[in-house]
Each structure stands twice: as structure tokens, then as C-alpha cells.
Length: 307
Image (tube, rainbow, N blue to C red; front, side, top):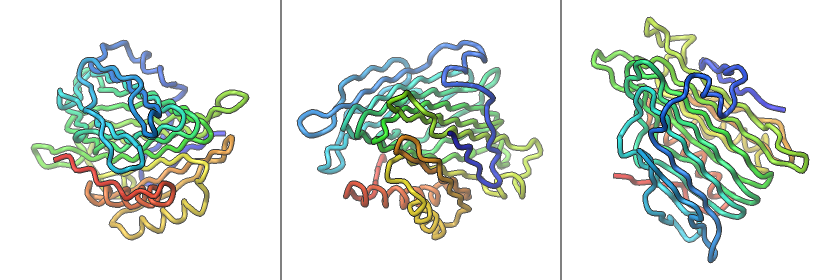
């Protein structure tokens, strides 16, 4: 059973029957950057067991934020931005018992994409008892930008996944909002069971600004920024969803939370929040993830200083 997460004022719609490789149907393109990262447990802490990069993607050396053994890697795009027809491919595997925090060095910037959209395809595989926190800096779509992000995630029923992301419109010379063409995000989340993988959630988000630049009722309720939090863990339940909803009320944002059905002992939730500030959404998402880090792992809230 799958869920289609819908939040008021955001155009959330499916991409038909597109799967993780279906972007080939839009025409093959050269891979601008490729990154492969595998993490396993050695000597009581998580380390890279596989690492490969080529083109305009790579990771910085690993570091550890505390004594938990969780490894942190920072993804870097030396090219600085995504452009038209760019394709970036990311493959991440978190092996049994390993813990990975994956972030980016700076915001992902999508500039003008004449002729064809920019695209990122990500595949994530998580083993038994593994943990992944995916915490990129904000995605900024500039004038005349079109971007598609397609993620396929395969988890063990005991895996723990937390993904947070903020989308914001970039600066426009005339000062108008929403000059980008569209942003499409697709998360396909599967849980592995004895009888094969089952679909836990198919989360499709399409933001296509109106041609007349109207940002009032009916299009993001007049807000300019969108925050998203996806959590998959056996400990997810209605009580947690209600708690995160209460936390979100303390921020200047319009928020909704949806739960998935339980699959093979695992469950998920999606939180969507609308605001006019990247900082406000980062604080909101940080407060929510901070609760999960402290309660489930005894860790402090994240403080990722990158400048």
C-alpha cells in the first residue's frame, strides 16, 4: 500500500508510471557528475567501504560530530550549479548497523535550463539496523530553471531514515518571485521483506509557478519557500506525528503532517511546511530532527557550520 502525500496549496501530482530510471524516456543525456558512497561499521564506528566519484561531484574527507560513531560526509559540486541538460547520479549504500549523515557544502543552485531540465537521480540502499540522515542545504531554483529530482530508496524494516529539504526561488533581476519554470521531486520508498520489496510511500511534488506570477491563494498560499521532512522508522506513529505538528506551530510557517500505512513493521511520515524564509524553515526542520536525534540516539541537535 502506498500513500500520496498531499499538502494544501502545493500542487502535488504523480508523474504517471515513471520509475527511478524512467527519465531516460525524456532523452538520454551525458552524466555531468557521479558519486558512489558505501558505509559500513569497522572498529565500532562507521567508515566508507566504497567510494567513487567522477565529473562535478565528490565528497570531502569524513568527520565525526560526536562520539556516537556516526560518520558525516559532505557532498561537493565544484561546478557550483546545475545547468540545462545536466544529469547528476548519486548512489548511496548504508550497510547493516552503519550510521551516515550526508549533507552538502552549500545550496544546490539551478540556473537557466534552456532546451532541457537539470536532473538528479539518487539511489539509496539501507541494511538492517542502519541509519541515514540526509540533510542538504536548500535547493534554489533561479529564473527560467526547470529541475527534476528522482530518488529511489530501499530500506530494511529496521532501518531509520530522516530526510530534510528546503526549496526557495532564486533572485530575479526584476525582483519578481517564482521566475523558475518548475521543480519536480519524487521519492519512491520501498521496504524489503521476506516476500520481496513493498512500496511504503510514493511522494510526488510538483511546483509549477503560474505564468502571471500570482502567489496568492491557490498557489502556496502566498508563501515563497517550502520545507519537507521525511521520516521512516519502526518508531514512527501517530503520537510522533502529533508532536512534530505541535512543534511546527511555534514557527512562522504553514505546516501539515501525513502518516503512511505500516509496512513490514516500518512506518513513515511526511511533514510539509510553507514559509517566506529559508532560515525559518531550517529552524523548524532542525527542531523536529533535533527531537528525533535526542530521543532515539541521545545526540544533540545538528549544528552544521559550513562557513
